[in-house]
Image 1 (cartoon, rainbow, N blue to C red):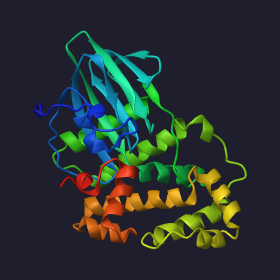
Image 2: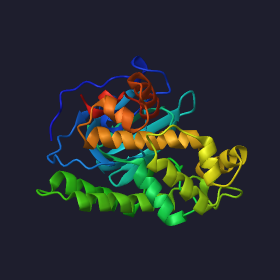
Image 3: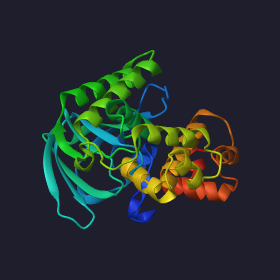
Length: 314
């Protein structure tokens, strides 16, 4: 374990309160030491970070993350306080084995006081949105779009602790880590989260929403033509509905308008191409339908929180 020597950045000095970042960037915004990871295995849609934290008296602004974030307390104990911007502080006492979960798209403030020692250790786990959506489709069928999970602070869940410890063992301690095994653990964890932590607004079947087979037909068509221009008329025709009724029922089924969902699919594909290929940023933009590099960068930054070049790490 080693201190990276970095200094954390206050998000308030970089952006508006609407800042959203990728998991890779979180270490820049949290005080404390980052533990060195021995494994160099990179797995799409799964990323972990290990931190050693000391007490933080002054509140820090934690950016919203693009990916769902799980935090497991590995060692130590602390009193952790959180609040929405402008809200009241809520406190929870945590010990090893407790976890936090957030998929909020709003930043929030935190501070903490350690107990019985100077530090406590935590593990951050970021699950790619496709893992969550795959779990939702497999479990529910009727909801093929983005999933809203409820935030959890300082709770205890044996399955979550087990899966996260197994992922840490595989990705950090195992001499010959397996991407297949790690991805399987992450997918099993995503299934458990969808089963147990679905937001109340999504419990139960959505009524008056687009039928499952029509939704799948439309989303498959979107995925197959990400480089093409978005056409509401074409999608409505596939669903055999007027544009107005199609848009209304699609949003009830997924929580997003057809155009917003299409952009989400484009950004998922763009992130994959940026990480897994050597295509230039311009070619990645073209592959997902943006002939203007500046427009692609603008949309990517709005949806992901950083520019394509920053996301790739160049």
